[in-house]
Length: 241
Image (cartoon, rainbow, N blue to C red; front, side, top):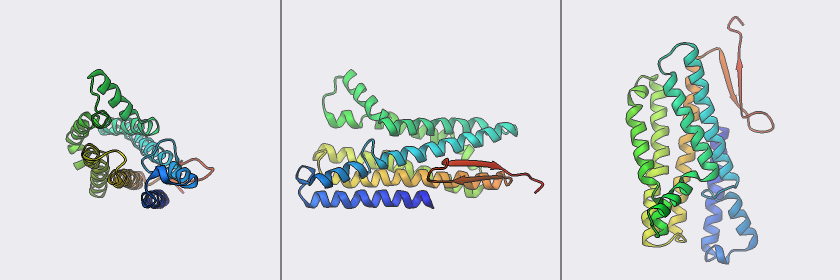
């Protein structure tokens, strides 16, 4: 719930600031204060509060997946490798979010292929990214079906929501950029939707993983804490108490 409230706050704040900037004729006409607030809260920005929040929740999801993999390995469950691979994927997604790795690789690919169109260069990662997402979905179909029903539904919802934002909405964003420009208000709207769906998808996944831990490991308490304490605290309780 805390993560959801945080995501809603950041998304809403970013949307309000964007609307104010558009109403005043764009960022070039905005006041210094409004520009600074936009840089701080911009949901599709880099190195700001929203980017840090997104990086953090992706890391939490990755660590939870690795935690489940470790318990599965301890109990000699066949699913330990699947959990491990998912955990590593989300750790990489967290790194990608913090340094915009996919966009940088897209630019490198465009330079190697002598593609000068900035729109194509910025969105060309969508082709390998979409293929990778499809392969993961196909490869994990049986694994997901074998999960407890509630976890299965939550994971499907989380995955569909995340991919809808990360791939489908970004495709629409690329079309808008090619028809108009990167400065179009429609780009800002689509980017808001894209990032909000990604945040929501990861938060639903975190809930699904915590719920799965509660079902499968009743003697393990997992608590999310925001503040000066660690983000994830695992406390194995004595089964005899």
